[in-house]
Length: 181
Image (cartoon, rainbow, N blue to C red; front, side, top):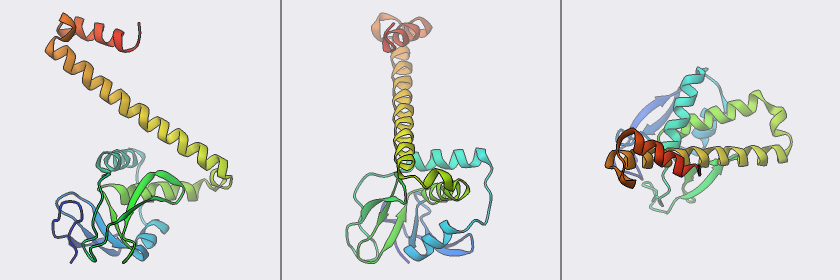
């Protein structure tokens, strides 16, 4: 059984939508072959409710690793590549054995995006629309990250009393300052 390339934990063999893959109990990632990955993504066994889809996308975004990974099967450095049309989904693939590592939530994210493409083929016939959607998705992600960082900074500054004010008055002053008013 392979080890997790991220946390080096021994992966467990699991049955995921009737396909045998490996799951890391430590970080929640998945190790599988290219054939099994394509098999899982290309068929629809379960229909996820919209709130579950949103939660899975959040989990995948939060767990996406950017560090270089080493294939625990053959020892080669894994390559990061985008999943189909979506540059915001980066999967890790071994160039030698074609093993695929998916961070926690990424397998579900790939399924959600691919199912959306199958349900809305008109959006993917035009390459310009694909590029535009990718840019909009990236911009949305960047804005969400920036807003989260600014919110955290404002809370930290309000809690510590930075700018000479603490509590609610300090928070209001910081927010006004951040948004240029």
